[in-house]
Image 1 (cartoon, rainbow, N blue to C red):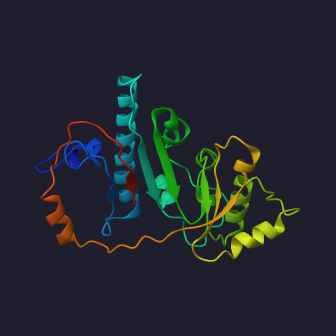
Image 2: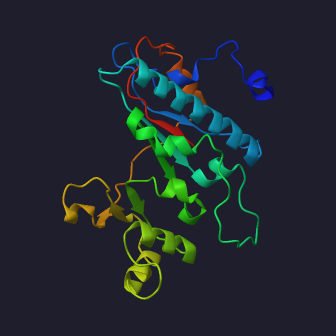
Length: 239
């Protein structure tokens, strides 16, 4: 419809499914970061980023069906500020309904069915209670930093197999609320022993990097091929 007409193919454009495949021939896989949109309202950004993520997912599903029996490269999609992308708008100031906002139906299969197509979705957000329950329960692995909100701590403790009712594990809830920066609690959901399924305390490594300027990005990509002949692993970050 209107979105397709407004953002259809044009001069200098490329197929969405080729994101992350801009490396040299024979080693195309890489990382694509989609960001910006400071002049757009939250709903417009949600529509665009949601549409791109849906294209990436459906392309991977089709590729999986066409390559049964052969190796299928994995696709990782990271949704930064995931609750805003899923719901299309930020919560209103002073809102305290205690319920997660509605989510577009296109996102639910990406989290519930993506693993069998080797599509792994990773929501990143500050308030996990704003995630729809069907998406939060589909997250097998979880990394938790400091949680200040009461509902956020309840959602996290339930996911970590701790009591969120206030009768036990109160020390755990207080610990989550005062964790220092870089300290994380990790819970991995596919262990083969009970001890592997328990929460692990870990520390995040900071990446030493310089934010590239627009001119640097234009110069770098002007030297790279714009097409890819074969699909490969392609992590995508939706920001």
